Image 1 (tube, rainbow, N blue to C red):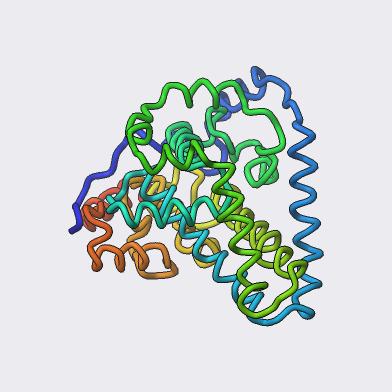
Image 2 (cartoon, rainbow, N blue to C red; image 1 turned 120 degrees about the horizontal axis):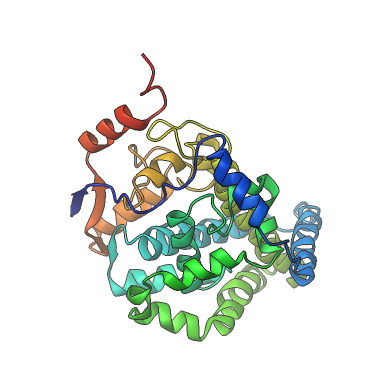
Amino acid sequence: MRNTMSPRQDVGEAGLSVDPNPRMKAEQETTRPPMVIVWRNVFLSFMMNAVAVYALTLIPKAMWRTTLWGYAVLVVTDLGITAGVHRLWAHRSYKARFPLKVLLAIFQTGAFQNSIFEWSRDHRVHHKYSDTDGDPHNATRGFFFSHIGWLMVKKHPDVIAKGKQLDMSDLLNDKVVMFQKRYYVLLVGVFWFAIPSLVPCYFWGETFYNSVHIAVFLRYCLGMHTSFLVNSYAHLRGMRPYDEKIRPADNYIIALIANGEGFHNFHHTFPQDYATSELPWTLNLTSVFIDACAKLGLAYDLNKTSKDIVAKRAARTGQGSLKG
C-alpha cells in the first residue's frame, strides 16, 4: 500500500544552491569556533584508506569467489544504510514488519556507520539545518569537510545543540533500534568483522589474510566513501529540477554508485518519499528492494509524493522556473 503525500516543509530547506545568503555565511564564518582536530579519527581514517588500497593488490592473489563475496556484502550492508537507517528509520518513509526490521538492522550493523539511533539523529539534523553550522557535514565548508573531514574534528556546538532538540521518541520506543544501540560493539564484531571474514575461509578455503582485507577492510572503505559522496558531491554537482535554491542536486553517477541515493534535490525537497525519486526503479536498487518487500508483505504504507505535487513544486521553485 502506498500513501500519496504532500511534502513536509519543515526539513531540508536551509541551504542555498551556489552561494547561501552571503551575509549569513559571513556571520557563520566569523562566529564559528576554531575546528578541533580529533587525531585519533585522522589516524583511523588514514588507515582505513591505506589498508583498502593495499587490499586491492590482494585481489589477483585471492579466489574470485572472495571478491564476489566482498561485493555482495557491500551491496547488502549498503541496503542497510539506504533502505534501513535512511529511508525507514531516519525518514519514516515506509513501515516494516519485525522480520524486515531485524534484517535491515543486521545489514546496517555490518556497514559500521554508527548505530541506527545515532545515524538517524545526525541525519535528521542534517535535513532540518542543511548546509548551516547545525549540519554535521555542512557542504558550505568545502568538499573535503562534507566528504570525510567532518569526522576528523569535533562537532560544531550547533550540531550538538540542534541534535538535543530533536524528537527521537519514535526510535527510543523501537525495540530493534534500542537492542542494537545497547549491544552495538558486540554486534559490529559479529556482522561487520566475523561473518564477512570467516565465510570465505570456511566455505571455499580462502586464507584469512585475503578474506579479512577484501571482504572486511576494502569493502568497508568502499561503503564509507559511497555514503560520503552523497554528503559531498551530491551537494556540489548535478541538476536542481525541484528546488534551485538548495545545494543538494540530482546526480545520476551518485545514484548509480549509492543504490539510488543520488537524486538528492528531489530527496531534500520531498524528504519523506520512500523512493527519493520520481523514477523509483531508475538507478535505484533501494526502491526495487523496498517494493519487493512490499509485495512480500514485509513493508507497507510506502509514502509517495503525487506527480501533481512534484510538478507544481518543480514549476514553482525548480531550475528554470523563474525564467521566461
